[in-house]
Length: 459
Ligand code: GLN
Image (cartoon, rainbow, N blue to C red):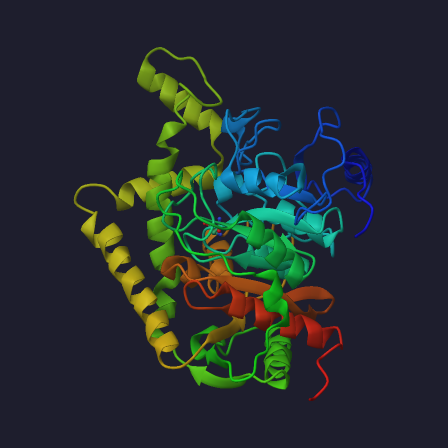
């Protein structure tokens, strides 16, 4: 094992780079050199490994702002289970990463603390909402990072920054201490410089937690060992709805290579159909804002964050929320409150719930038909320019068109680098049935291996 570098050196290097001309604004806070434990014991799975953590996971020694003015300087009195587990495994939190406010966005431009830049092209977004974590891994500050994925926020930035991102099955990782955006969709996810890195971090943070009633009491497979699993006999479906005629031609070419890599390693590929896919975006953008409008009611200036004094208590709430929340968060609260209001509840929220069930059934049917995995693009296009979609929320929302169905269904997904489009990274997404993360990790590792030119010799 490599010698463990002192955390203060890692943090000092990140700080110097972030303060220099090439700074990415990837971090909202960095670990204080003081108070860090001495060299961790070597036999732990993440002994000494520096890990970046998205700023919506509660930490006690660093602020937890969710990229929001409303939580500026907020210190949690407890730690998220995922963070506690990564520390218990010997990992060390180097800092908290930038994000779209409360996870609402696809570009990290909705952070109250300025956008994160894509390290591959600093004129472009890193994707989002976990853009800080993706950029931190892509630029090499850390090999691993934690994020959260409600509609694609781990997979989509992984694709745009050229790193690996895993969204596990809903319930695989505890949400305790993950600040809620849309609770029925939120999952903690992992980033890695390689499939193995993302899988190792997932193995450490996964598992049952009595503090999260939706966390599953199921055994955690050895995810990292999945990178060596054979694909012989594995059937991979290509859902036609994820390859529209309008798909970017470079993205399509990268997916062709990913498909060839899976076939070269023994998988059989066939075309499948998931016809309800076209309803996923409208369904998601009713359900996620509805849940968000309820979850964000707690930021009323009484117990949390920004408070603006005013005449009466209602005026105080209004002034505090107006000052604390950014434009996109306000838009979601208005949309969500409307969708849940008496008289419209069944037409919007109820209808979206029924569509959600059909999307889940679509996946269940395909997986029951002998298909083990699905291969799709992660995002319809590579990283777009800063500012390009800021005035057009619908075009921003469409950035999630291939990632939201997995959240609606609760199935796991991984994005693995699959090539580039004019120098910009392109990710392939592999989706698996509920609890079959290990199989999807095996397939992603095959794509990674073939791209590195180290495919298994024919036996
Ligand atoms: N981009 C989607 C949204 O804005 C999903 C973001 C996420 O996964 N947190 O809601």
